[in-house]
Structures are given as C-alpha cells and as structure tokens.
Length: 121
Image (tube, rainbow, N blue to C red; front, top):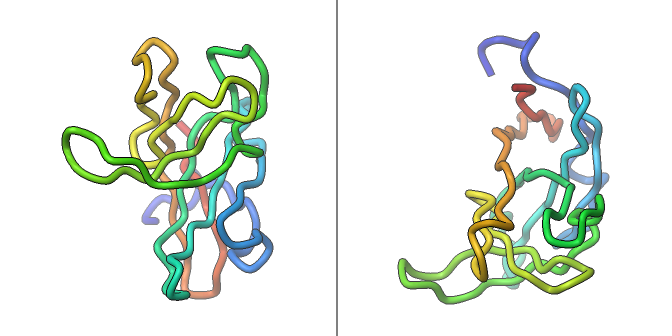
C-alpha cells in the first residue's frame, strides 16, 4: 500500500464474520469484501469483487455463499450469487458458468492492525 490516497478503508478484519462478506462503497462503486478462513482456523485471506451481480442485475454478491469448486486449472474460491447461484471466482471475478456474467476483482490489502483496504480504481 504505497499510495495511501488510492486506497479506501473498509473495516477491520474482525468486523467481518469468517466466511462471509460485507458491502462497502469505494468511490462510486459498491464492492463486496469477503473474509475467508480455512476449516482448520488458518486465515486464508480477504478478497474483493464488484457487489453488482450482472446476471440478476442486483447489488447482492456480498450476501452470497462462499465455497470452493474444482475447475480446469484447479480449485477456486468462489461466491455463489444469492439469486441465480452462478459462481464467481473471488480472486479474478470470473463467472464459472458464463464469462459474460463476470465481475471486476478489486485489489485488497489487510494491514498488520487488521485494517482492510480496497484500492480505488
């Protein structure tokens, strides 16, 4: 996080229940921010994608279910849209069922103090 002006504070890591998401406003965009924790309790990471579900035309992705699916390139962390259940990769925003429903993945960082920051772009 070298340019502080381009990053937006969202919340602290502990403010997000493990394996769920929250919605945050970054600039003019709604961004879905997810905290993923492995079953053994190890922190896997924090991810951010657009909150707008292209298929349902609604801002709902932060309320989707997090999971892992096998793909042609290996396992992928995904969120299932709460409306039509299409799966979006948390790392890339790519929709696994139809790339036309893909969304933007945002750069996200978690500081030593647990502060989650999303890069505005």
